[in-house]
Image 1 (tube, rainbow, N blue to C red):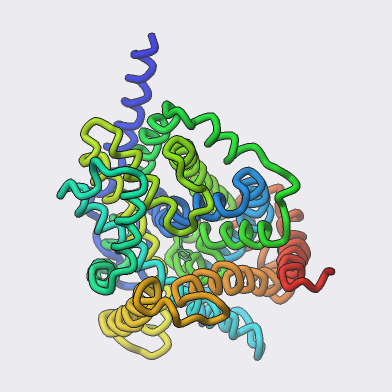
Image 2: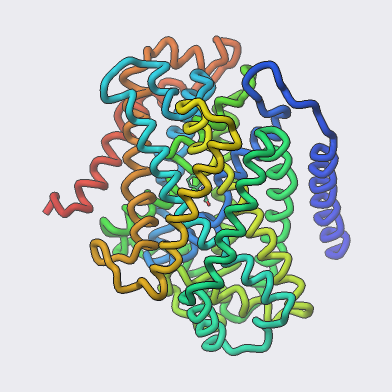
Length: 479
Ligand code: PHE
């Protein structure tokens, strides 16, 4: 009976996967007459999920949770996703579909106001800065793919895994090589166009990653440290919740949902008019959160089994995962598939980051898509090279006590994205006419949605007040 159950489970996944392959291979003609749109509804969700799901869930979430007390962090994170994240996501989507343009011009199209019309620049800058460190980590996945096939990460002890990661990530050449390769791939997809490139890539990669994560979670749950790992992740120690845990959890929620950087404004500008946006926003957030939770369930049992410190920081996943693979039969194969999918998940996020800046450069400076993309790729490459070097040979160069890599991560996730989200919500709640907002959300009164009142209150009051309080508290002004 149990076997049969597993079979059904497997079959469902297989259908899921085959369905996506079928949709992906079903080539539809590109919309050439107007602004491009995503063709299928499932494609829209997958592209948005593709942007949201990435290193943020699998690399950043576990290490932030590990550094911020596990359960305490998770609790605050979930509250942030539901109270701040979903409404902000919906606000971004609404603005994007209304304005149908890049994330800078979107604000200008809806309002003429000297301050409000500048909010979009913050998002474009965030995306560029995120590209600077995100590509570096995305590049690491290539190294691990390579080592999986060459056998380099098999048969080592935990200390050796750790040492080999440190040696690699601080060396001047190898990481840069992979980083640049990652950027080149992203660049090629971007110039392939919205529908052909982004949509097709997302539809195939996302479901596959999900399936593999589930398999690896099942494996982790059978490890000796499973109980300790799950307790660490799911049992909140309320005393551990302080201002820095809250800031970290809030930053993670915005980072993971790609909020406050104009991504969803840009993507929603390609939406068709009949998309049910409240439902789409909720689905994207739920899928994104499930991937983060799966990553946690995959990582923490292993962390406790192999005696790794949960507070390791950005190294955590890259030290823990090889341990997991090393004790699996055919570990190299699993490892290769996993890092391949992680690379693909990073690419779908990189595409969205790149696309925000490219759409801006293309439309504002009247450049061709190719030229705009090239400008963005070059800028990102320069930043990424320095970010990578800042972990090794340039580690002494510190700004505010942080190396460039950490600084880019901190400034974007903990300051710029929450700030961008706050300004967006103020804009949508106070500046946009309420009738217009409601008409947009309900697809011109053809949809019913009984959360509208709550949504407006959240936009106008809750997000601005909460985010401001977290900032003020972090600055220590409450004491
Ligand atoms: N949300 C992405 C992730 O979790 C990262 C990202 C941030 C992408 C901001 C786009 C914009 O990996």
